[in-house]
Amino acid sequence: MWISSEQLPIILKHKWYSAPFTESSTNYVMYHDRMNVDVYTLRFNLYSPTFSEDWMLDTLLSKVMDRFSNASTVVGVTGYDMLLSSQDPNEKTYYIFRANSNQRQSSHTIETVLSLDQHEIFLFGREASNVDLNDLAVEFRSSGVVIAAILSIVFSFFSL
Image (cartoon, rainbow, N blue to C red; front, top):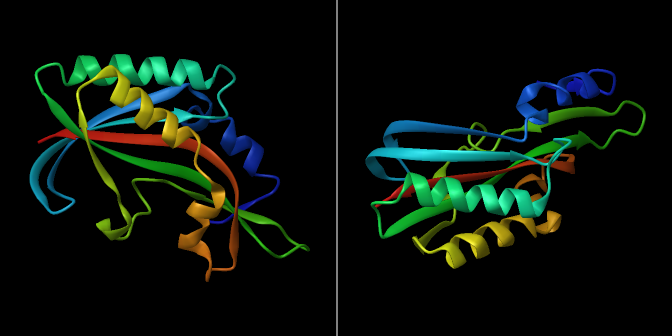
């Protein structure tokens, strides 16, 4: 759904984007070519008034280490909620691309196998926060939109 310039600030104040983070656990019958996978997702909202990279990394470490305390390895997947903008200068409209909702296929998803080690989880989180917009724009080159902003960093984890 396309959003007007007037509607955008109202939507971005909603708790989906203003809460520091959300977490969920979903059991998928089929997930990235695997059967019966319990996926733990953390979504960190960059536009939350309390967001900081240090806080995100600390929270990520704590949540993942607690959640998977009985595992020796986890698979991590990084995604991004993005604000896309039309290129029409006369009438700017926006679209919110949700990381785990707008994915059409798993072929673009990069899975990283991580030892359940604080240093590896920290580096995984740090790399996600240093993403280059040009790398993300590849998905939208032929669509007539540009990435106006990254709204959230979305981490999904599951154990093997």
